[in-house]
Length: 385
Image (cartoon, rainbow, N blue to C red; front, side):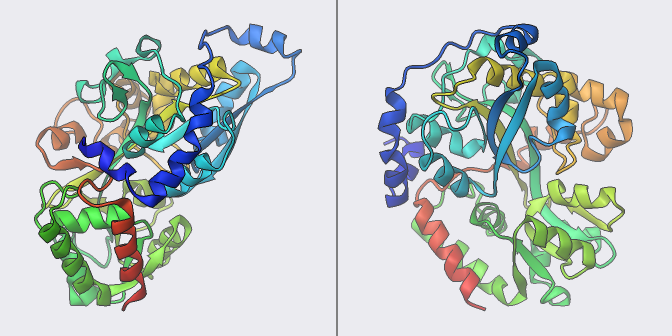
């Protein structure tokens, strides 16, 4: 059994896969690209609707308005929080409900195996402009067949209040246990990033590929942290907790929240600690049975080209790093301060150096245990003070 297959063996995965047969039976629609003007004419001048399942922000005006105007369409989002929530929404929806599916990269193999994604033609996308590390990103391909295109990514480490926590302390996950911050440590309420971070702190170089003894160690280390924890927060709660000072440290997030807060002057930041950090990755796929294959492909092309990448890097909902090197160049020209802030500079140290040095680990689903094993422990951890 391949390692990536093991996560599919749980009861949740079996329930998720039950709906795949009907979806797989639908034939793939042609993805021929037609012009924006011909689409407008074919719809009698009426705007078309492009449905998208995504994290919040990806269909907001700062991202989608230019595309909507060009193609006479409206991008209609269904927003989710967390990969398992995304899987549940897809499994409960008829084929064709979502033209576009934005997912965290670690979930792409599950979506592909369940038959929820259309196969893509790699020649349609600007991979030659991507950094080499991202041209054939793990899990997005099945052999030579492409099912997802990487849009943006970011790092998870220690998020902290810069007035309460010195950066020197934030450079180790050990700071979460510091008695000075008891009752001021928060968790972003999703098991995958939190347990991955603490797994790195526990000394696991492959934080999601744990033998039985290593998983037991991870649980023990986390239990020792629980008395420090103020609570478990969604995006809004994490945002407000850091902004008002209720939280001085947050586990499981990074610049995607602190960078947003810093725009309004909040004294917060994030750092990848000495033990290493995790990379989250968001990618776009075309949903199986889409009624708008041409429009869906055009949107992926739009957001992964250099200008779209700059929009994505500066997205109002939360900033991110981008994989397109030409996007870096354009960002450096149009907003050099933001390029420097995020470390997307072509001269001097940049975020690609952190990846290439091995300091960053791609976030993934549990390998040796099931998703339920990790989720069950997360639920137990949350309940016990």
